[in-house]
Length: 404
Ligand SMILES: *[C@@H]1O[C@H](CO)[C@@H](O)[C@H](O)[C@H]1NC(C)=O
Ligand SMILES: *[C@@H]1O[C@H](CO)[C@@H](O)[C@H](O)[C@H]1NC(C)=O
Image 1 (cartoon, helix red, strand yellow):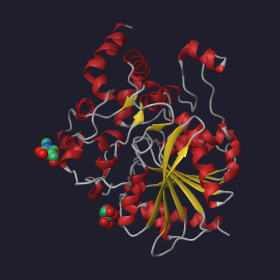
Image 2 (image 1 turned 120 degrees about the vertical axis):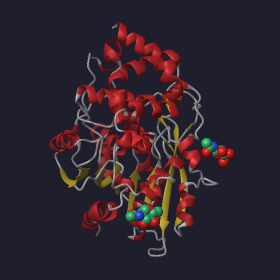
Image 3 (image 1 turned 90 degrees about the horizontal axis):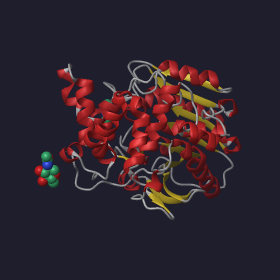
Image 4 (image 1 turned 180 degrees about the vertical axis):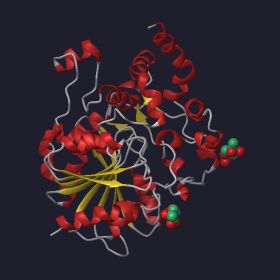
C-alpha cells in the first residue's frame, strides 16, 4: 500500500510530468534526423506522383478527424468506381505510416492495384487534435480510450466514405490499435458490419495478458496509478518524452550494453528488437511518431493486460456500478463479429503475443489467421523489409476474391 502511494507521488515528479505533460514535439531523436519540412500525408503521396486529397470528418461526439485519401496513380488513374478501402493505424501512429516506405507503403500498393485508398487518423493524434467545442489543452478533450474510437471514430469514417463514394461496403485494413477499435465497433455496433466487406487485422491488440512490449510491461502494473495521477494532476495527454525513454531504457537495457543505442529509441522500447524493420525509414519515423494519444488508451491496455479479458474501461467499483450497473466492466461480445475477418500475426511480435492472438481467433465466429514467421515483429506490418511479399500480397489476393 505504502509502496503504491510512494510510487504514486514519485511518479509524477520523476516521470509523470515529462510523460504526460505538454512537452513540445521535437525530441533528440527527431532533432538528429530532422529534414527541413515535415510533409503531410497528402504531400507525401503527391510528391510520389499520386493523386491525393484530405478531408475532415466530424464524429457523433464532435471530434474532428482527418481522413487522407489516394484517388489514383500513374498505374491506376482516378475513377469513380474503385473499391474503397479504409486503413487505420496503430497506437501513437498516424495515416503517414502507410506512406513512409515509398515502394512498400500499403497506401501506394493499394492505389496502384486500383483501390480508392482512405487513411484514417483517430482522435488525439497529430492530425485529429480537434473538437467542435473542446480544446486539446483541456482535460475533457482527452477523456477517451480506443473504446470511443470504435464507437465513434470508425463509424464516422465509414459513413463518410460510403457517402462520398456511393458504395455500400468498403474494405478495412487495420494495424494494432486500429484492430482494437475495429473489434470494439464490430461487437458494440454490429450494424456497421453491413458496411464492411471484409476486415484485415494486422497484429490486432485485443487479448493482451501475454504482451512482452517493454513500454507496456513497464507501464501496465501502474496503469491505475497513472489513472489516479492524471486525475490528480489533470494531465491526460500521453507524450513520450526523452525522460520516459531514458527511464524505461535503463530498466530494459540495463545489462545489455550492445542494445544501448537502440534503447534510446522509442521504436525499440515500444516493439522490441526488430531485424526485419527497414532501417532506411528510421530517419522518417520520428517525424510522425509518436503521433499523440490519451493516457486512457494506455490505461485501458494496461487493464487488458491485468484482466486477460477484452473488456470495457474499468472505472473502479463505484464508477463501474454507475456506468455499467455492476462491479466489473462487461466484456466486448466478439461473438457479434460475424463478417469475414483475416488476422495476421508475427512470431517476433512483443506487443501482440501469438497465444493472445489465438485466443482472439477462437473468440471470432468467422475468422482466419495467418502467421508471418521469420522473426516478423509488430511494426514490420507497416515498415518491414518483406511486408509486401509476406503480408500485403496475401491481403490483396483475398481482396481480389471479393471484387466482382
Ligand atoms: C537540433 O536542431 C537544431 C536546429 O536544426 C540545431 O541547431 C541543434 O544543434 C540540434 N541539436 C542537436 C542536439 O542535434
Ligand atoms: C526501405 O525503404 C526505402 C525508402 O522508402 C526504400 O527505398 C527501400 O526499398 C526499402 N528497403 C527495403 C529492403 O525494403
